[in-house]
Amino acid sequence: MAASAWALHDLAKQYMGDGTVDLDGDTFAIRLYSSASNIGTTSVTTAPTNELSTANGYTSGGKTLVSPDYVDSAGTSTWDATDPTAWTASGGSITARFAGLIDVTTGTVIAHSILDDTPADVTATDGNTFTVAFNASGIFSAT
Image (cartoon, rainbow, N blue to C red; front, side, top):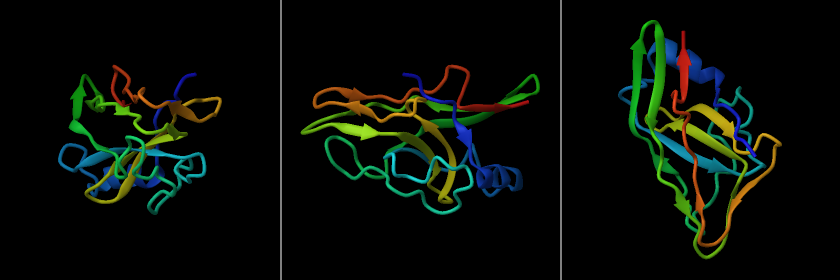
């Protein structure tokens, strides 16, 4: 099982270009979504559907990204953040198909990742952790 690379959403690209989304200044969250979500379509312009409900160790609204930063080095601009802390399944399993990065400040969907590129749901059973880690090279970069 391998997660897909983060797919940038169309509106996020536009908003990053016109300054609506501030990659250094806005508040961002990582959220988990079921297989029934529309977040897997990069043309989503409204709030994505079917975020996991608060249950079994997951809290609706996800986790706030820590230290999001957009840095340029030698002509390559990279956006990254500290890896989010894992969700620990408690009282049942946490099952998700997608992770989404949301600009909480503007409500814009920035990107999504399919957590298992088969695609298939990913499950953390009771007592285990559900972890999403960012690539060591950053969430995304532009050259």
